[in-house]
Length: 100
Image 1: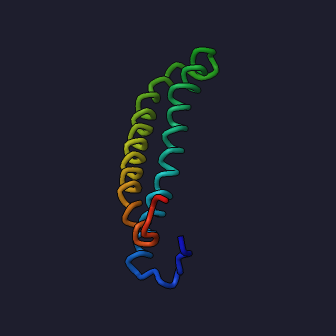
Image 2: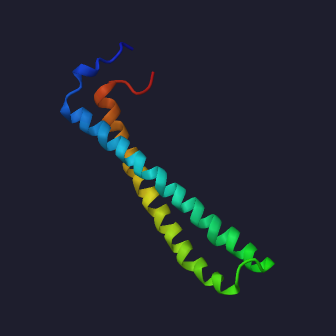
């Protein structure tokens, strides 16, 4: 496969690369938010309440934190779907053969 000359990329291809990278950069913090909210809502709060470290009233925060985490997961899934849909458009414009 011959190397691709970056100068041969036009504005449309650069815009496709920009979209692809933007979707990935949005995906990363959404997954981090999901992971930490699930850790807090289903790991730290129940454990702390059971051992008496946290007051029992803190258990009421589990549902809102879980909803925030699920919303972040939904956004992350949407970003990954957009990334997967954008990938063939982006890479086929640069490399004409994706597979060997």
